[in-house]
Amino acid sequence: MPTETEIAIIGAGAAGIAAATRLAELGRSCLVLEAGTRPGGRAFTESASLGTPFDHGASWVHVAEHNPLTPIARRLGFTLFEGERRRRDILLIGDRPATPAEKAAHDAACDTWEAVAEARAAQGGPDIAIAEAVPHGGPWDATVSHWLGTTICGVEPERNSLRDYIDTGLDGENPQVREGFGTLVARLAVGLPIQLAAPIHRLEADRHITLEGPHGTIRARGCIVTVSTGVLASGALRFSPGLPAEVEAAIHGLPMALLSKIALRGGAGLGLDPFARLGRRVEGEGDRPMSWVVSPFGRDHAIGFLGGEAAWALAREGPAAAEANARAELARYFGEAGLARAFPHPAVATDWGENPLFLGAYTYARPGSAGARAALAEARLADGRIRFAGEACHTRYAGTVGGAWASGMAAADALSATLAG
Image 1 (cartoon, rainbow, N blue to C red):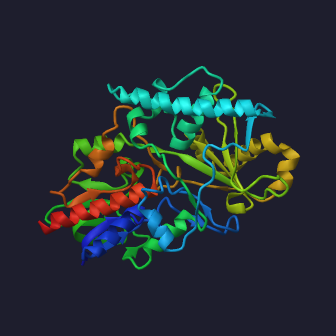
Image 2: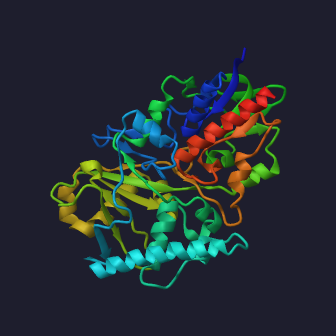
Image 3: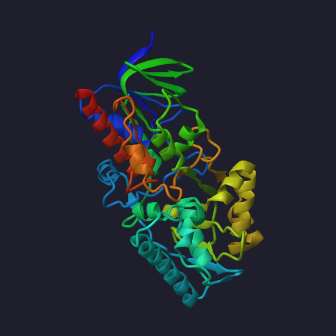
């Protein structure tokens, strides 16, 4: 006999946890079905590799003053800290540190890049790629595009929608969580009806909603789907009847970007303050610098960030290639001998791009697909009994845990109202 539940939720990331939390508040019963062996999704903290909490995924509580998780984190006693934005303790030009005047020119180029992008988007017209709008040719323009575009967005500006970039810009306060953002999300999953190692491969809508996986069948009145658009586009979850054309278009208009982290333990004797930031100027076509945060919360970590096609390429090559690339980057700052002394331990590399449960870090919109987030969030399959939720569905805070949380709450409200009608 199939398992019966009022509402099934596919995925126990932030959106699924939020949806289950809200449904409980509304007096609805639910069952959260998670394919992996832990809750939290792309918010994941672990301590074994580096000896202290390390966020493999989400690290920042973006736009904290409006983030629904900020008051929750503080109420639960989590520690939030924000370092100086756009700070560069070391900014290299070739093999030398930038002068104060050159650092100021870099910061001014960042301001100009953002202002030009905003002004171009405000003009209206067709949704174009970011690269078509921002400055080119200046001494810092390629570096700024690499940092603000490829690294932060996880995709090259040539492939990213300008309108979506502006609509989902993450201004305001952006603190980190001392105990780990993933620790917070996992705490919020405690006590919820979550079934781990329970992948769903087929979702059928008829008189009932039927979910099928290798461990059995679940029958429900309604369903909230929170898996990534990468998983949806891969066909790992099949829908019967098939998805409407507009939903398929929305999913394929929101591919997964990749921002990878490579963390090294050590850093003794470097003389850097907590949360020190390292970066360097792009040195020509094909150069893809990593950006670094060293000693977060005073810990002996150096965490490198690499986005876009360079991150995908290293993900395909595996952890050894990622570590070699990271060490080569850090050697630019500290020399080969200094690097070997300071960071003697093996590196930890994230695997979001190769992990079949995610197939990327977070979404971006293709040029021309700026409306895809709203289309996916507003999709009402099976007369509204099947809804989508997740960071991809949030039209303001896409790519964030807060956006996923708010999306899950909204989907729970909408589905509950449908079932009550």
